[in-house]
Amino acid sequence: MKVLIVSEGKHELGTSEQPGALENIARRLRGGNVSFVCDKVSRGIPTLHGKDKRYYKRAIRWMLEAARRGFDGLILIIDQDNQPERGVEIKNSQEDRHVSISRALGVAVQTFDAWMIADENALTHVLGIVVAQQKSPEQLSDPKNLCAFFLNKSRIGLGQSEMYARVALLVDVLKLEERCPLGFTPFATRVRNMSRELGTAEPR
Image 1 (tube, rainbow, N blue to C red):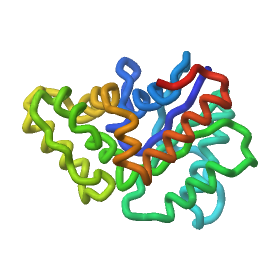
Image 2: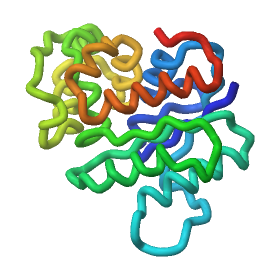
Image 3: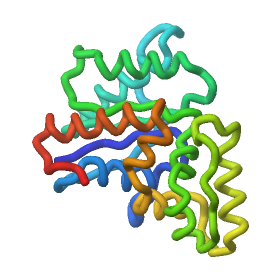
Image 4: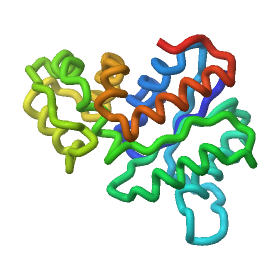
């Protein structure tokens, strides 16, 4: 089973040698024997005509691209960045049936970095410092810089992408759903639904 993972930022994606945070989260949600390949939303693929519904069209193009490459499914995440219309467009592309490939599309509120702050216990374990529970992650104005602050304070010598990857391995998924209900919860539901569509093992 092959699934293409697509996202915007470098901190979500790993390398050929080391899985990234988004892949680690997806694997925990999906379970089963799945081969993931990662790519960036910004990669130059043919675009649909017109300036309206930009993210809807981009998601559709990635569905077509995933199908063209022979993938069984597509996981795609973008940041909301205080633009609520992105959520509407991604929801519409999730529900679009012109392309038959199984998909789990999501919008992180306000950014993917907020998901890394949801579980203070995972942060404390990875960083080796005591991290108190933060206020609602989806209401933070700059979660990326807050993560960078914790990382710098810890002095463990990790890059931010590696920190995210390690947090994603340990984060309490149920707590993440509880604390990021606008972005993570619908995404997690779609990933689990895709697992059932593709007949993979029950997610952990």
